[in-house]
Length: 252
Image 1 (cartoon, helix red, strand yellow):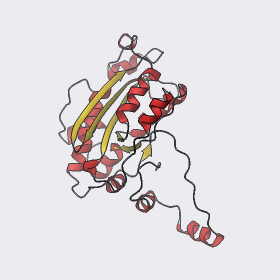
Image 2 (cartoon, one colour; image 1 turned 90 degrees about the horizontal axis):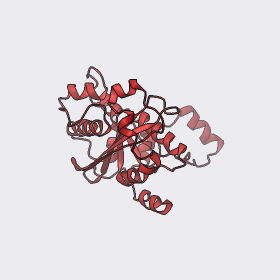
Image 3 (cartoon, helix red, strand yellow; image 1 turned 180 degrees about the horizontal axis):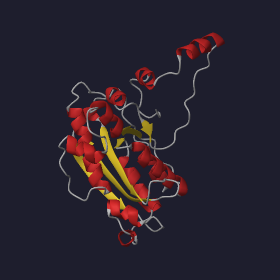
Image 4 (spheres, one colour; image 1 turned 60 degrees about the vertical axis):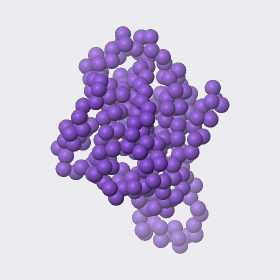
């Protein structure tokens, strides 16, 4: 199992200078028992993978959380205890999930929510998440559509006339499809965005799915350190520009 997972996570991520038409993207959405990743559990994961503006694969997994799903959560997404009683556990779904996102730049709406839950589940099950870069369509939408009446996924879908994908709202695969539509619509209205570094800047930087070690910084003499301090902290944009053709993996 370890060797299989290692092989799946070694597929290289795209370089920041890569044309968007050559990048594999995978939208990830999770449904959960609540909003607190420390106390809650994931009960569904949806993945929609696309390249060159065309969906090439999609999959969803119901997950038995090992705890009761609160009624107020079921009201939101419609997933009941009965629906997950015979579903696999997170650790059983994990290999298929990792395989489905291998080598892809991940996309999520309000991405930190999904990242926090996935990290918590991985830690709870002693599993290592791959270091896929993650772009947030919430940040993308705020930059690209500042005049929208709101930036929740459902509000943006109405504002941009994205239509209604098949399936119940707030189910993982349905929301992943809608997020993919939002992402592709935003890019279609941003013709100057052609490469990963331009997209990363529009999205306000990237995160990584799996926790990453702090990057080592070169030593500097006191004079240089003083100059850097007076200039203020290095911005994300500066770091993006300075790594324009390296592999897209460091956390922003």
